[in-house]
Image 1 (tube, chains in turn orange, purple):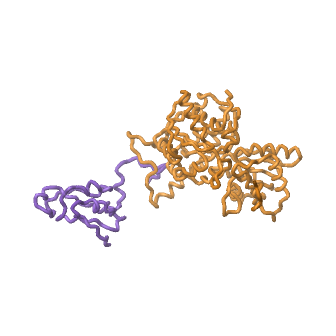
Image 2 (cartoon, chains in turn brown, red):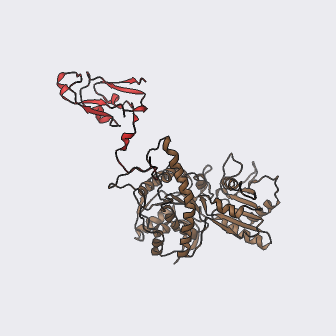
Length: 394
Length: 100
């Protein structure tokens, strides 16, 4: 069945299809439609779940942690400052190894106040122990969210998952979505068997207990091991997903990489625009390609090495800033893992599309031209479309 | 030590293994000649580090009280928080510096 839906509605539908038990949420732009749609689905009798409107994002994630700890299947959604407000609870969720799925409407971080799209909010939480998957379109939001429940409930993983979708570009954009039958989804994810120790009055337990210096390191290491295991678990679950729903995903998506001279690297909705730019460039005989990261945590190091360890130029599209470091996060991490590869490609960081600034096909064609003109002596950190200081921008 | 996933503990009563007495820098000491055996310190102790024991051999403000049980601080677990000192109605508990 096809339905035309906004990205936020898709996340709510995914929650319904995945038989989520508890949805604690506090609304924040651009994720507000999620709790709205959830309460509508419950009020209409289409969904059987407990919706808990909380007084803050901090409480929303705390309720999610409690509900997951007691064995429920849980989902919530937030963005930007809301995600930042959840920060201290995020590591508690992963440290207690709780399966939780959270939709992030990727939005810029204040100040200045800005409700539009970049990926600073979720990238800031890259050390929180949450798996992060970035969707390119609304169909992917649905598919990745459904898969996320299966990933996070996997015994080798037992980690919470963020489904990151770009603010407005996905959260508020309507697209035709192929919605699977609920039965198919239930068969795919399986029953919530709670294959873990939960809060149960019959079998009392302490979760996330005290760990003194003699023991703490080992628990942090376990989260890292689980994250590594997630890599292959995600691969298996995506393969199973393809068999059942005939849509193919991987932790990275290569696009027209054959004999490419310049490869864009990006995450999220902007990748769709880059694909169009690559098509235009290819028509002009210019050898461009794209490697899109679907998973950012766990970082798909092996796959990136496989595709990028060669004599090419790489243009990283970084939709985040890490002040005080030369270049942004995606650039830094990519460069770091390619350090010990056989071929070291020339990597250029384009800090672009911050706070909802539009990135068009023409912009990427310009980036291609600029990158191809660069040599080893050029400045490899480029602030795309940066207006000079003092210029009247009104 | 078993490193259970998510730092989970499934058995009960294991806080007894965590001897918190070593955290103490100040030590509460009961002057039984002032203690009226009201058990308020026993009620308030957040670590259940005050026991009630037979009082016949302890001094008391007046002899009838010797029939009652007396509070006795368990220094293996007392962290020296001083709540008992604060709550004691007859000012019978003193906080003294811990000597090694």
